[in-house]
Amino acid sequence: MEEQSREQKWASLMRSGLAGQESAYRSFLELVTPHLRATVSSRCRNFRASEGDVEDIVQEVLITLHLKRHTWDTSRPISPWLNAVAHNKMIDAFRRRYRHHHIPLDDVAEGLFFEETGDSYAGQDIEKMLEKLKENERVIVRSISLDGCSVREVAIKLKMSDGAIRVALHRALKQLAKHYRYNEL
Image 1 (cartoon, rainbow, N blue to C red):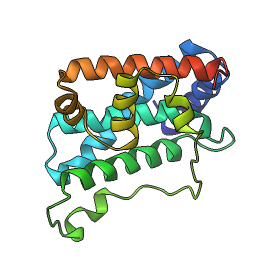
Image 2: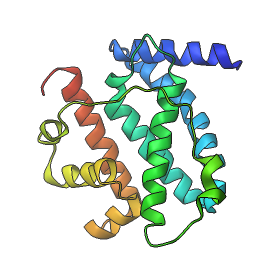
Image 3: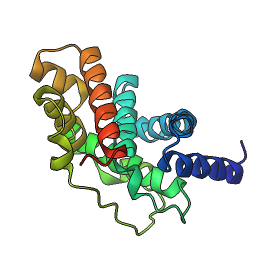
């Protein structure tokens, strides 16, 4: 897909998704996921991240896109917004992973930069949204999406399998989307 037509397709699908067309939103996520996975994977090579680490970051990016999709300015290109979200989630993951390690900036600097848009992506009142969830779901969403914990860390903390955490996270996000869509917040 040519760069410009890809951008237009993604933007069109996201606009339709924001207007309530679930199939368009699902198509948007399906189309951007391989791009996000490739972007995150290429940036993570400098950190010798495993495929599992890459996949965790991609999942965090997708969760954030879902929770913050209303912050995209529909009059602007979507790729810089996607890249900014991915960039921020990678930085969060690298900070968690290398919290106690010294890594020379020169070794990783070129892999960390994305085109900056200058926009700030302020979101809704997350706490109000989280009140709609069951306690366990709230802990999972808060831990992964807000506190930056990995799926593995949350699984250990809650004594659950990684798969169970992912399923619970998916269900919680679906519930949040339903509440958001029907303005129940």
